Image 1 (cartoon, rainbow, N blue to C red):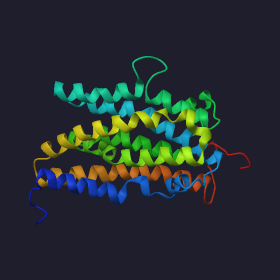
Image 2: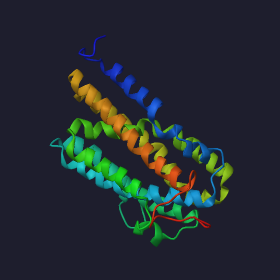
Image 3: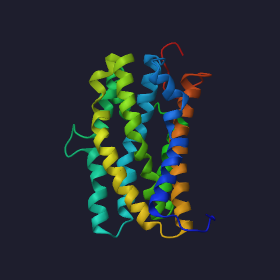
Image 4: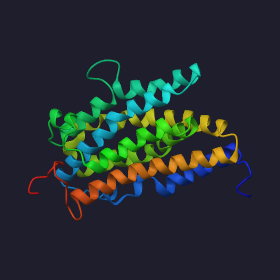
Length: 245
C-alpha cells in the first residue's frame, strides 16, 4: 500500500493501536520502577503532585474540544468526560479522587491543589496538550485523546502493583477503579469517531501524528519526574522537594 492510499477503518484503528504499543508511557522507566515497588514515598508524592496538574486540566481540555463541535450528538457524548472529572457536586469526580490519592501519599490537599511545586516541565507538557486541542484541527484534537485506548491495562496493572508494594495507598485508589470503565467507554467513542471522520489519507496521517504527540506529552511528564526525583535527582528551584533533598 502506498502512503497515498486510504486505509480502511479497521486498518487505521490497528495502526493507532500500534502507536500506543510502541509509544504509550506504560514502558517508561518511572512506571517500571513504580510497578516493581522500587519508588520511595517521596517519589510517589512527587508523582501524585505533578500528575494532579495534568488531571486538573483534563476537563479544561475536554471543554476546549467540546467548544469546537457543532454536532449536538457529539457534544452530548463528549461532555460526560467533564462530568467524570469534575463530578456533579463538590467532593465528587475524578479530580477529587486524585486529591485523595495524593493525600494517601502524605501530602496535604492545599499543597497539591495550589500547584506551587509542580515541575516546570510538567506545566509545559500539559499546557502543550491544551495548545494542541485548541490550535490543531478538530480531528487532531479528538484523535489526541486516543491514549485512553491503552490506559485500562496500565491502570489494572498499577492497581495490582500499588496494593502489593504500597498498601498504605489503598485509601486513594478509587480514581483508578472508576477509570477502568470510564476510559474504555471514552476510547470506543473516540476511535469510532476518528476512523469515520478521517476521510483522506492525509487526515488519517494527521490523526496518527496527533496520537503520537499525545504519547510524547505523557512521556515528557515522566521524563521530568525521573530527572528530578530518580536520576540524577535535580529538582529545579521552587519544585517539590523530597525529604533529604
